[in-house]
Amino acid sequence: MTPPRILRGRLLSFNRRPLSISDTESYVYEDDGGLLISGGRILAFGPFETILLDAPEGAEIVDHRPNLILPGLIDTHLHFPQMQVVGSYAANLLEWLNTYTFVEEQRFADPAHGARIAVSFFDEMIRQGTTTAVAYCSVHKASADAYFAEASKRNMLMLGGKVLMDCNAPEVLTDTPQSAYDDTKAVIADWHGKARNHVVISPRFALTSSHEQMEVTGALAREFPDLHIQTHLSENTAEIERALELYPEAQDYTDIYARYDLLGAKTLLGHAIHLSERERDVLNETGAVAVHCPTSNLFLGSGLFPFKDYETREKPVRIAVATDIGGGTSYSMLKTMDEAYKIQQLRGERLNPLESFFAMTLGNAEALSLADRIGTLDPDSDADLVVLDARATPAMALKMDAVSTLAEELFLLQTMGDDRAIAETYVAGNPVKSGL
Image 1 (cartoon, rainbow, N blue to C red):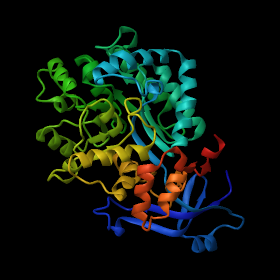
Image 2 (tube, rainbow, N blue to C red):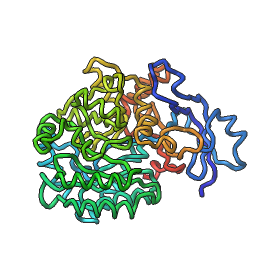
Image 3 (cartoon, helix red, strand yellow):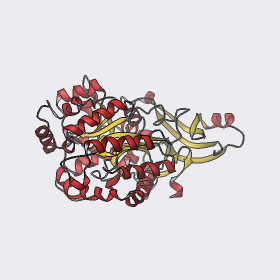
Image 4 (cartoon, one colour):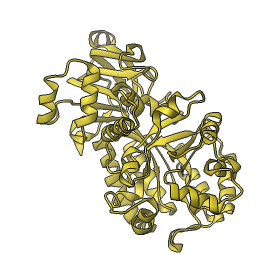
């Protein structure tokens, strides 16, 4: 076990979603703060001098001033096998899938390829300050094995699952209802609850799962009610039309998943842009989460996510935010929220920087039902942290000369920041970016 450490710097942690840019009660900020960490956990959080007085003798002091220390960033939807698909030229979602994605994912039948990409994948997470992510692996069990093996080596709290996909994809990239069930159970037995791993039941989406496979997916959800479920919903209008052709008995796209008992508080629905009022009500009633993937939605021309409409309606919809690599174009959660801000601008709404940083930390932790472990600097939370430098580039440093408030600094980080603004990433209390 590493000896106790005190991280010194400006500390920021949210208590709840900010109601406005002036909602100072929604967060705790220490201008000269101390964070006592040991054994992979946060032991104390407060003014540096107070933490120093109460710290064990010999605790190491790591001074990150004047940088900001926050909980590690969380990405709730991306595709582990798509690192080499990012930036592929296509007109829309379905063309992109058929031309690039399904071709690339076939390579993950080879365990050696999956193991190689896993090293790059987790290096990139750390470089971007992302300490927890929810990933789709490929249809091959070997891809999930590679993903979780690398996560275990790094002691990262990661979620993911083998994709279930038995139709409307290249035959070499499909499973069967039975093999999907068997392989998913094997991944659960091998990895769930081991190290810090969480296995996710992962039907790709209704277009690539037969009625029989959807029934198997529902059976898995009933057999393992504590597991997360992830899939895609209403990303693209052509996708919606095709889903309803395949499932004509459904009232709408959301109803397809409801019919197989796949909607609940741990269900993550990627994109969920084009939802009717009835569908929004269903998400509210079931607690299912709409996962906003702004860079992907813009890159593939899928649509403008109605963030504020979902959030402020009488029956609000739970929202998470994500990069959606490789439809998404950046691994950075900072860039992700920069694009989320622009989408709301186009919709005539505003997303203030406090909301953005809440979303990347506690908001996403709450969406994953993991706020007791990650997403805050609260004592007894896991010591997954990010250190942010708002002067990381000459242009940022120049802008910082004109910054006078915390909200302005956060907006600068969101707008101009990237991996260079990540001064350090801590996983379970250990600094890991500096070693890359």
